[in-house]
Image 1: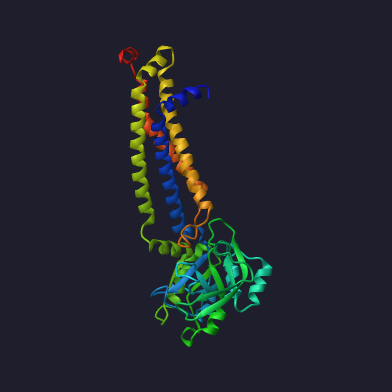
Image 2: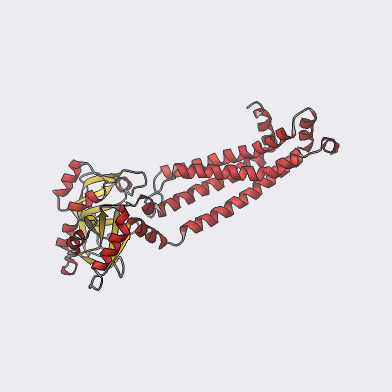
Length: 380
């Protein structure tokens, strides 16, 4: 802090250049924040997946159903603690762009299977007593300004006709990563209204195992139990299932890493060039500092501090704007239900910014440290 005035005066000798360099850092870190948000959204299911849960789907495809009669057979498999099931509904609310997950769930078993979704008991009872009742996530309710008691019409695409639901409960997530954009309703309501083909069929099972260490064995035994049947199964841990689902969108992680690497390499060149020019313009000033008794190490630290300060200010601005954007909710209208910049991503962004600042300023700082006082003072 003792030499802060000197540091700031050096930085703003060329105000426009300094502001533009800080702006480069801000843009780069803003982009980094958005990429981190997108990466987190695609990996949300993997991060919050239960270690003791398995997902059982039709071996052909997840869009092919399974018999509801498998539930009792699953419960008889050693190591299985509980079983629930769900159906994808796939309806449209007002406009096809209003996408959100809608599922018909098994009332008796769904809530205990997913304790991370918190539902007030009185609202749960209201839902259970209404055959047309529905439970919606807090973010989904906020998005459409729904409240308890609202009647919501949804046009079926897989299951034809217009279906009307009464919102009886709004659930919250136990963790910030939990998906609170889903819409759940009674499986029995779906079964009653739908044509005979769908009766006795469900979309997938979720199985809770007594010991997470037995997950692989139980998954293998489930598939062996139903092998060579008309409805063969494919069972994965919830984490593996979520990961495979995310991969359908492509290698998002590699894409984000590639974009980030290009951006920060460009930023490194821009900042390095800025600092090199700044040192070249101040050769005589640096020589005077040495002549009046400041050490080579002081000159090295001074130039590095300038580079780090630019990185710190630019990084704070960029990450601050990225965080501000996430506070305004999901701008993708449901395409990315988890739109959140985590503290870990913010810390990583600052670390990367400071790393770029150090690397960009290191060579100019070493050049300044090695200046020969006599030769430098002779320059015009």
